[in-house]
Image (tube, rainbow over all chains, first blue to last red; front, side, top):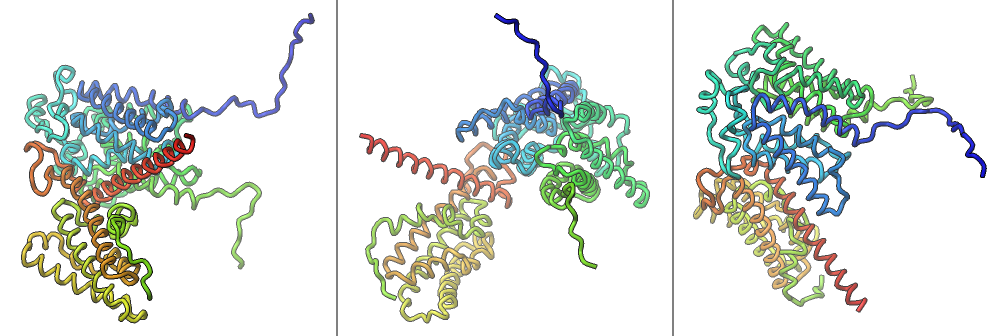
Length: 350
Length: 216
């Protein structure tokens, strides 16, 4: 018997092991969303926890049922349905009735994803499709806000959370006043738009304000987004373009339109702009992939967001801006195709 | 034009209800289907009105099929259809002014409903009067059935009622989107999905039975 010869394996470049798989990226997005979810639970109590669990469960169950009905392989392990559920829950008001959350999760997966052919084929961000549906179906419930950091939030549910299925949620105005004095029942954007009150930027930055479960703390969302961008699992150019354009548009209005327009910092840190720009606009399937295209895509969404906020009927416009951006993204990708190396552009004759 | 096939059987009628349902299979008449199905009552009135016009115009077109010159047949059909639509419109105004107000222009638009013109052109002008009437009745029933499917779901979810009768307790939460135009598209899509799925299942069950029969 001869001894096994030591071998040297020779390979030509490239020596990169492998690109991250879809599962790895999706798992990291879930990790990045966990701190935001935890902060939502800290800020709004067990109602937020119940909402996050219910909506995510609804998304996973819907995906599972459609897989079974269509006799397709189990696609729960790619974590994409979990991300949709988490993101959707984070964009809903913390006291949103759980049964409406189930409807939103079902619509997000069924209408936003499965009907288009599953992961990789969805035209729109599924979470926002679900939110747009419940916004149109239950316009009152989705604009009912509750105060942050209410005492006893870990012990009792917000009254509207446990509404029986298909029933109208009870009014939370009395509960809100009882929980926190002088709560006006509006988000910072609503306060600015309808009452002319501007919440301080530092409160918005740290998240001490009313709003959707996961949109309040700009700081936390930025940190979590930076983690993804640093690991190259998110295209940083899209949020950069979106936030930059929103800030520039707000600055232009402030400079030329008068001081009743809010400051660019207020526009950046209020409402769902941070969460939308970092976690929803960057949906890999629904965004254009060309280098120039992502800048245009982000800029369009940032601009539309500010225009809807200032001139639309609703105080917040991030959701519609991103859905419009998604709709435009194939067109943007088409007109910004890069030149193939070595190929010449056809020049028009002089 | 000579009529070849003169037999009338159940299929002549049933074709329009199921196999060639104007809404769920042929995807015709989408405009009233989406626009006036926000409640079951509206859907029923619209469906019955259309069915009436279908049957009457089918009968008249079939009667006159040897007299109408080919060159002006479309215009002639339109005039015939418009006559019956005017009758429906006046009857509704006289006896159900509330519903007439809700349906509004869509009653008059039955004139240009492509199901009716399509039946006149493709069926009534080539078949005997009785066959045309039976087929038109089937189409009318199929159209009414489809409209009722949409109207019932949209009314139950959108206002918690069916034909105006409250189904749930006073705390029912209406789904506003269902009575708005997008709701029409959602519900139509849902029904199409259901019917296509059912058809596929029936078809695959049929082939399975054939295969097992052959194997035995």
